[in-house]
Length: 177
Ligand code: ZN
Image (cartoon, rainbow, N blue to C red; front, side):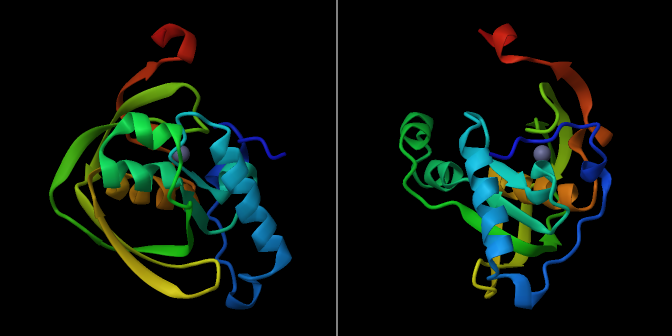
């Protein structure tokens, strides 16, 4: 079982390496992706995870199927109770386009427990990546998913949201209750 590393771990500050085409379907990369999905599933509020967050300095991130469900239904209850959509894997992702329109949005991170703050994110983002089979795809998103694309690609460049977020607050779960 892989634990999620926390903010002082130097792996979170490294520029992660691209996954070579020939390695994408290797057992090693498959195992890393599986470990990422498992770590993400254990976090009730987890929406996405980048490989450096489980200590692997590689350009991979996974978006939880919960989010895909949520975007389809816009019903948070059903979306979090029963995950129907599969997790989405982004290997060697590149941001191709960001909208000029930016918004100040609330953000947190599984590796920066339990700080939350406000950060400027482009309202729309387009990402190009490879899937688990190495096939290239492009995906455009707005709102929450666009925010996730930006947060996760930042992770692959050693950037954490607290580097530029404002109004940081420490909100451990016991304080919310
Ligand atoms: Zn994060």
